[in-house]
Image 1 (cartoon, rainbow, N blue to C red):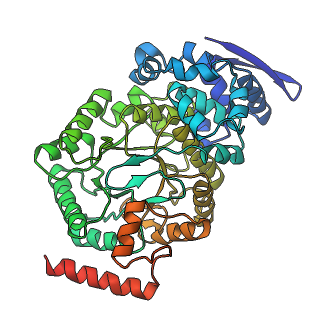
Image 2: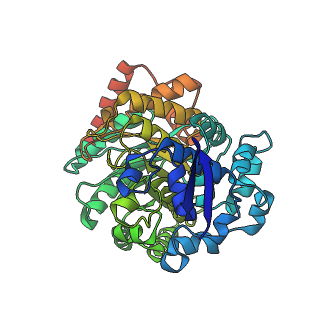
Image 3: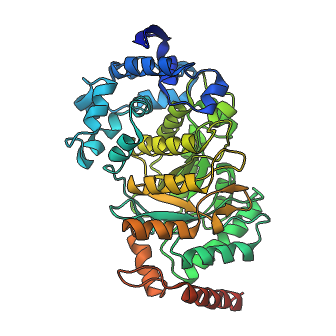
Length: 466
């Protein structure tokens, strides 16, 4: 175990091991305070960053923050590390790597080339030395393109997950929310429902309704019921129309066990989804959600800060070539991200780490009602992420998820972002919006009064067909 010292404010600080160094260097957040691993003062935090800046990137290959023998995520990270891709930056310290990322040399091609050689701990460490502006500058350079029925991650595009959750899983209610979202240009990444009742029969009913709606109107998107991966495998065995297999994952083996999964189960589920032959040519059939604090809440954090563990969750995602990954940045609550400032910072960190590791990264810009945050904070984060090139955002009717009881973004929020920043939906979905008369060629979604008329027309047609 390494030991590092640094001086700040006239006092010398000592850090025993990478985990302690990374935790002390993190921007303050309530989850690390709760775990008792955060810096005890700003001076100690600055000293940790001094020490971290001088740390060779190679150090992360010789010392694991979670023991190799005890954790399959650590084994995945180190056993699959691409030494050839790492060679270009192997001589750098963490501080040097930060400077290189901000240079003109680190363009999209260069970032894609080194991505397989980066470990989650390397990118997490680097983010701790960066201002929000630095994170955004690097994030917007990295594109990760994936495709199923729609192509996601292209330059100048901002996709959405349409989330039509309902507190009783009422099919008509979910269909109405879905039509509302479609008519406001949402749903090009996925139409994804969190089921209120997580059972196989309920999942089948939801999937059949959503797939029927998709086929009825020839919508170039994917559908997903965010049921547990083992339910998804049973649903596939029963012949239901599964496009994407969903699972929440975390950055340690113990935290993943808390979710009821391990790497073997995820491999089995991916193989089952690929056998259906519904996916595009790249075989991207997985959808993962993550969020800072999940390992701490599962008491499986091993003394590692929550942001570094979040980055380790992205190593799990990367191993399965997902179509979509998103962090649900403020969902767990103020115990882990106390206020709007911490949520905004975490959202930018997560997006930065996911992008550098080669993931098609989205964000659920959200907060719980007991956090010290509000809609203005979410407006700020969504705008920063859109400027940073986020691949997709999650939208719910009226920004209020009445089933999960948290605040997210509305369909109109993304309409505003696309208008303000000149961003467009996925190309196949944009063409569909134009064909359906929902959008004008090269222009915005049609006026609100026509939207209401079109919604009534589609709802009537859907009702007439049963």
